[in-house]
Length: 136
Length: 414
Image (cartoon, rainbow over all chains, first blue to last red; front, side, top):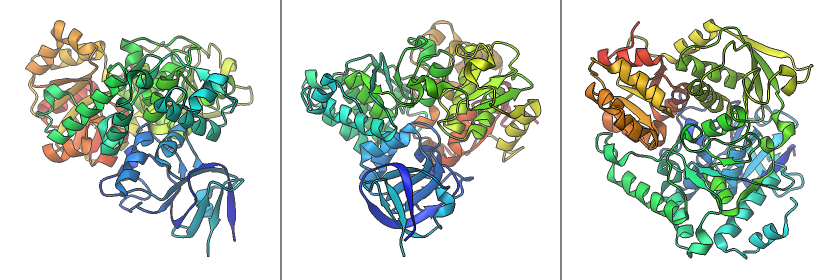
C-alpha cells in the first residue's frame, strides 16, 4: 500500500474518494456552499461537487472566512470529508479545529501529483506521523 | 506547547467553559503550526459576517453569550470586521428578512461577550493603529497585512473563532509572524513603474500575490520611487493578501522593517520578477471578460473607503447622474464625517448610495446578485474582483474615474 506522510494533521481518520487538482482552496472564493460545488469559473474543479469527497489540493488561499465556513458546511452536511493540502495557512487549521474537520498538510512530494483523481484513500491524522494511504 | 500555570488552569476550566474552549482551540492550532508557547496580545479583531457563520455559527456564539457575565466577557479590547448588512439600506439592496434576523442575533451575542461593534476593516485608519512590535490577534486579511507590513506590528491571520479565542484568553499561539525568523523576505520583486491610481496598486498586489502563492511567503519590493499613501498601501495589501493569502510584505525604504533590502533579505535571495506598467495593464485587461458590455452595478468596497476616497468619489459625481446602481461602502466611523461634511449628500444627489458598517462581498453577495439581476460589476478594488467570480458575478477592474463613468453611462469607457 502506498502512503504519504504529512507534517501535521488533525481530526478523525476518514476514508473516501479523492477529488484532486493542482489548484488552491478557499471556501469563500471557490465554493457555492448552498449547492456544494466549486463555483469559481477559473478553478480547476469548477462545476464539480465536493460533498463527501476528500479534497486534495495545493495551497490554502484567500481570506479568513473559511475558519467559520467549514463549521457551517459541516453543520448542514454539505461538506468535504477531509482536506489534504501541500501547504496550509492558519485559517484552514483554525477552521478545522472549530469544526472537528479532518485536515492533513505538508508532504515530501507534491500530493496533488501523487494521488490520482478519483482514487480511494484513507486519511489518518492520528497516525505518527499523520498519513494519507492509497487504497486498493 | 509550553503552558503557564494560568494557561493550564484555563484548560482545566477554572475560568469557565468559554475560556476552556478558547485555550483548547488555541492549543490545537498552536500545536499544528509549531508554536512553542503563547504570546500576550493587546487587541483582537473578529471577522464574523453571518453568511460565513450561518445558523450553526450564530447558535454557537449564542451558547457562549448565555453564560454568566464573568465567564463570557472578553479580556482585551475586541472589535469587529464589517457585518453583513447596513440595516438602513437593506431593503434597497433587496436583502431578505432572514438575513437581517440572523445579523441581529449575531450582534446581540457579540455584545453579550463584551465585543465592541466597530464593524470595520479599516481599523488601522480609523480606530487605533497598532504600534511597531505590538502583538495582535487580527482577523480580516487586509487588516493583518497592513498591520504587519506598514505598521510593523505582529499578527497572523486569525479567523473569527481564533480571534474570539484570543479575546477570551488575552493571548495567541506564538507562531508565524509573531516570530522574527518568519518576517524575513522570501521573494524579491522589482517594480519598474510605481502605480499611480488605487486600482493599479491593487493590480500590483494581485500580481505579487500570484507570484508568492501562499501564506508563508514574504515578498520584498524594491524600486517604488515615492512613499505611497495609506489608501494606496491599503489597496495593495488587500489585493496581495487576497490573491496570495500573504500576511506580510516589505517595501525597501518605505515599510519600517526594510530601510535597506539587506535588513530583510539575505544576499543570496534572487530577483524573482520585475513588474512594470504593461504588467498592470495586462492584469486589468484580463479581468475584463465582457469588454464593451453593459455594466449592471458599480461597487466601491473591499476595503471600506476612507474619508479621502469618499471626497474623491463625491468630486467625480458632482453634476452627474448615475443610470445604474453605484454603491460605496465605508466604516461606521467615517460615515458620520461624510454626512457632516456633505460628502454623503453629494454622492447620493448623483444617485449613488453610501453604505456603512458592511462590506459588499460579506453581505450575501450571491443573493444580492440574484435579487437585483447583477452580474457585470465594475469596481476599483482588485480584491473584490478576485472574490466575486465565485459568487456568480463577472467583475471588472477599472479606475475610480472609469467606474463613475460606467455608473453614469452604463458602460465602461473604451
